Image 1: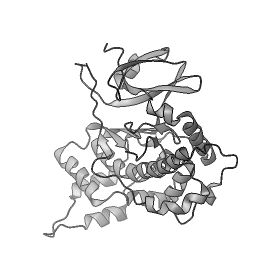
Image 2: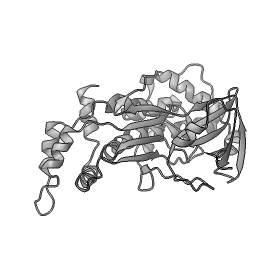
Image 3: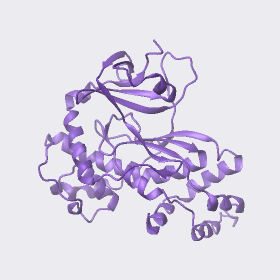
Image 4: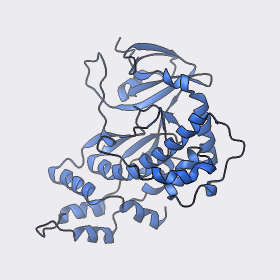
Amino acid sequence: MKKDNCIEIIHLIDTNVLKAVQSAWCDGSYDRPVWYQLIYRPRGAFILCCGAGLLAERVQHLRFTYDFIRRIGSQTDSLGRALFTESFLNYLQRLRLCADVWTASEGALLLPDEPVAVVYGPKAHVLLLGRVMEDLLWRSTHWATCAAYRRWQSGDLTEEDSPTPEEIALCLPECCRRALYVGAAKPAELENWLNDTAASPDSNEGLLPAPVALADSDEEQSPLTQIRRAYRGSIPQGDIWLTQVLEITASVGKTTATILDICTHRRRTLRFSRFQNLYQPVLVKGQPTLAETKLPYLRQRTLLQLRLFTPRKLANYPHGWWTETLV
């Protein structure tokens, strides 16, 4: 990764985030493993994931440079006291990111209540990574989702000659241009996107703790870690939500699964010939594992996903917790 990208990533981490990390450092919880989810609540009927490639590319060499440490070390409060202690600044300078991140594939369609990403790692690392993910994943997903939703509503889901990424309006930020391209935005509509670029997570979304409520279960609860999309042939049958324990129990040889549908609060049996794990590792112990994917391929994947999930299909699409062990 280029040095400029590293500097850009560092400056996404603002003073409020650093204060939260210092609090964890002071109370000893900085190294405690935690689960978080990146949540995006769309205006429409689905989410179109985007930005995992950017995250893998730009976060791998996250370092707090000497100049950055010196700058934040000089910050003071209203009484003239240093905002950050010397021991905390030394910790930041030594820190090497070691959190794990799983995201849905770029161009993959998710339901509104399914997280864009699942994060696990030391609390301090997750807090730092959360701000970066909001900028690279949340914003990219927002722009891609808006573009894909317009395309989905128009019903024009085929494209013989895709534009090149360079043809996406140069007046927009780089991350926005990339996301609009992946989201299959039409070149003629790109001048209308400037009003959408200011969106950002509010207090009710973004990086949130990952709780789970398993119905009818007296066992200790654990967070969602994987969603399996079941298929018969090429047609999606439903999304099966799994915790780590359930993922081990739900063997790869199964061709049926009973889920508690969160829309109807009733159990439904899905029959399928294969499944796809929606979340794939992007960072493992802070290191990227995601291979680079060409943007034209991601754009075509988006159009394929939009064709699979017609309005009628999406309105009744089953998704929820795997419950075979709970019946």
